[in-house]
Length: 260
Ligand code: F6R
Image (cartoon, rainbow, N blue to C red):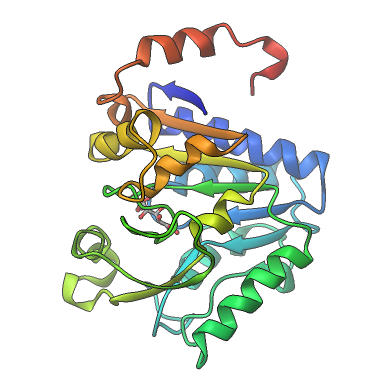
């Protein structure tokens, strides 16, 4: 795993945005795996700026979002459908029919999940998957103890995650208990994975993911087995890593042609 520590969340997000932009320029029909939550917001803002000011073209891009709450209609303000259209899709030229977000209202969730997996395969697979991380180490909504080989399916949120996500609902009691999420195995199939984390609230989860043993108790730790994983974090999220000097040393010596 490459570990890139940046002074601020904005600096880290610029690097992530440049990775996405380079892929979209090199491969106009790229397939992106996307996350919601507070973490990717500065990256989406930068990509919107690149679209508006530099003509970054998303018209051929296909997207698959990681997850959605079960029981929320797409127009619910706390749904991940609403989040994505407000913060990203509605501000770029992505084609509506190329956008995929799990359906929280499906009447047959297992069948929907199978189709979601098939749709990813039919596009040729995800080129770049962007991830945040939960304070408990979840990726997507694969909570601790999730199978590290799991595929898209229904999951039950932990009490910690429901508390963390309460803001969008105004009240922790209103956060749904269930979600549809890509599995850890689905995420691992992406050709490149970028995981972002900002603030000291994420420091422990990042330390476990990067330096801890690979364990379903910290699902992000499976990224140690991914051939092309990039962890881009700010100083706060780096505070519990043991080998920060080494990671900085490696990044500072990266050949210019490899830097973004
Ligand atoms: C969101 C997702 C989650 C979040 C994680 C961090 O689609 O899959 O794994 O990335 O819960 O959320 P924030 O960024 O709000 O701290």
